[in-house]
Image 1 (cartoon, rainbow, N blue to C red):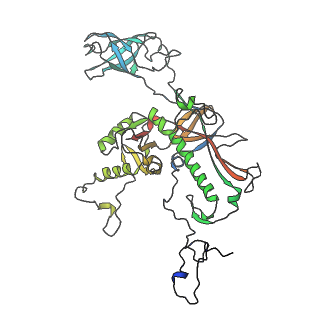
Image 2 (cartoon, rainbow, N blue to C red):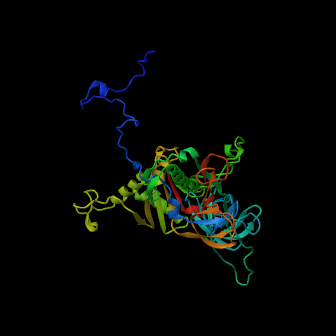
Image 3 (spheres, rainbow, N blue to C red):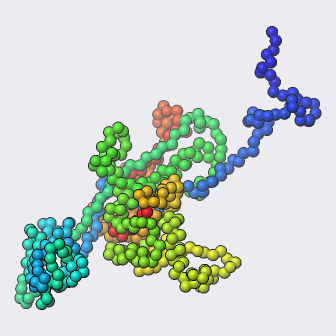
Length: 477
């Protein structure tokens, strides 16, 4: 029997170190003596990849032991109606006004109007055709109408079908020796609520993979550095979960009764109620700037005018994406007297040998506005990757009032100071669900099941409370 020609030998060694066709190695693999140079340190091509920190900067965390979180926010102290009509004729000195506003403040125990006999009011035409000051002489709480007499001899200056009037109370007047004010007003409080959601994640590695160690030197997003093997993926799962704890509080929406989440029956383990995230609450109860970024002082004056009509919080932080940040810088730079002729050096001592600072950290115009870049809005794997066109859902910035506000806490049963933004997590004396992590399986020291793997579980149950949403501003495309 002869030796087969194939497979043959790979090389024919030479007695001298001379490159020949017969001794030239073509296949460089790890079985040969020539191994490739490798970098044991992982290169951080994307820098810090985490996007969380927003809520840590502006909010706080506190425990809750209920499936439902409720709080009361103050209503307006004074009453104003903007949809009033009358059948009066021009120059009538006595006439009746009907209140058509939706959601009238409660009068005593009935859902009626907060107008009482003897109060003095101002009646103004919504189209700006005139105004008159009057005193209330009669009130029909069932019909939501009231009769007034004008102080001026000219009576009502404008009237007619289809006209709408604004009415607000500025005082009262009574004769000597008369009885007190009839009726009383109840506080106009607003009750809000939110439900916590359960957030989960998991990392799994088999026992066999755990036995094959290959070290990689890394620097982590939390500042630590060293060598990891399979635990690198576990560490990144933890970082990803930390980000989701924040982004879920920002983006969460409640499940509508007729929506797919509330009605789906395919998977019985997925959530079915949702929660009210920051963006959702501000869109529903706050202020929204649409159509790009405000790039002129006149546009910021419009924002300030709206804030005047809300809580008038002195200090505010505007969390912005990169384009919005540059727009604010460009707007403020144009206020320099030398902007048209170049950079203004002046008091800032921007000499030619030093790096020129073209950015601003904030400005004051009526209120203090501090500017801060928000990485979440810039990250291309999150909202930073959305198109800058109307309807894309892109958010350019969020104005958040600084400080805290006083609300009535339903659990404590008293008024309490709370940050405008804060997270409530489920906790009791025996169970803390703020940030839970545990290991299951039969590998890596765990002995809880027959599974030949180690599973690292993460869980949190939380909700965000956005107090005084009327003081927030959302900037959308």
